[in-house]
Amino acid sequence: MVQQEIVRAAAVAGAYVAVLALGEGVRRVLPAFPEISRKTVHLLSGLIAVFFPWIFHSPWTVLALSLGFCLLVEVSRRCGFLLSVHGVPRVSRGGQYFPLAVYILFLVGRDQPVFYGIAILVMAVSDTLAALVGGKYGAIKFDVEGNLKSLEGSTAFFFVTFLCIHVPLLLLTDIGRAESVLISGIIALLVTGFEAIALSGSDNIFVPLGTFFMLAKFTTKSLQVVAWQGTILIMLIAAGVLMYTRPRIFKASGLIAIILLNYAALSLCNYFWFLPLFLAQILYYICILAFVRAEGAANVSGFQVKVLLYSGGLPAALLFAANALPDYMSVYLPYVTAMSAQLAIIGIYFLPFLLRLVHNAPERRALQGSAGLFWPLLTVFFIAGVPLFLYMPGRFQPAMLLVAGGTLSAYVLDSVWRRHRHSQAGNAEHRRRFFCAAAGAAAVYALQRWCGI
Image (tube, rainbow, N blue to C red; front, side):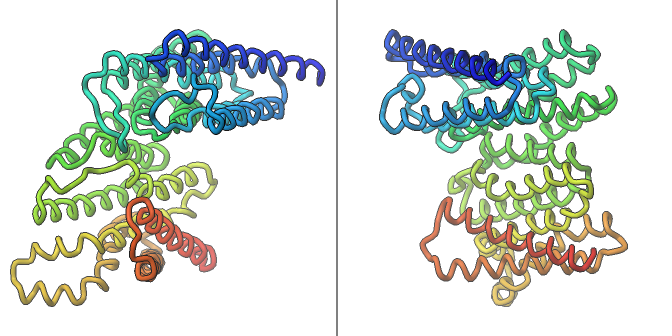
């Protein structure tokens, strides 16, 4: 058995070397089109990885192959060879994420080879065709942190992903036709969103893992539940487009990201988890409108994916944790705190613009003196008050005290941090806000466990 595993690993390693050699050949034949050679390697590597559950028995074998591929990609990047992989002008870590995704999928999905194979197919085939279609025919562009993507490429990704999911589900599983169509459509919409906003090649890990886990979730549901999930997604898309394009200050990438986060709250948990997220968005939207009224829409750079990554990353992680934990209630208060703390800290920047809405000068001056103290508490009551009253009526007061304490601690920590690091801007500012909010949420979790709330 061990000898067979070694022989198979050597054969697969040889196949990957041949794929890289083929990619180098394509690059030499078509030097003006580096994306073609890169996607050739990407597609053929993925098609080989599809068969791993039928080739290998041990995850250690796949780990060794994945680490070897990662090492080869990193060394070649540093030394300047394998330009078929590294020759594109944009910054991408997709070559490293690809083998990592394959190993994680094999580790969790080798007992579900159909779902594993679908996830790899989506990563390999959909991504390849979307890049080629977008590069050749992409006319309607949208910006994602400086990277231009196209509506045509995303449309191609959606339809190819739908087929990559629908055909195997029909042919290789017992899932009904209606369920297969709905599941394929919902997952294709969601992973198209993931792919559209992914940065630096991270779609190579988010798209396949998202596809696999959504398949595992949706295929256990009834037709009625799947249909309701699809209805929720369509409603969120419609509401998001309506809310975030008037005034036109939010970028398409931010719109996609917030829709995905809203859907995660409703799909993974329930509307009690969606409500504080929705209220946080309303408060942020009010802040943006105040800024636009004071400074003009031309001075707004637009909603960025990185802003959402740092602002919504912690709530999103807690949503997934809640979905995986037996007692999902245990992270609800930290989840609410993460959002109220972020908005309290963000409000430091927006407070002067909000206060300009008060036209009476004496009242405005009076408010300015106390705004720094009362803004965090106002944020807590706006975001947490109604959700906690509805969700935890018997423990409303201690729950509110915990969320208020966590929010204030994050707010104070951020204020102290800013005094000692005056020059922080950009990503450093986002990271500071993220870590302060995380500290407040962690303190709430610890106190909650200690108090038994």
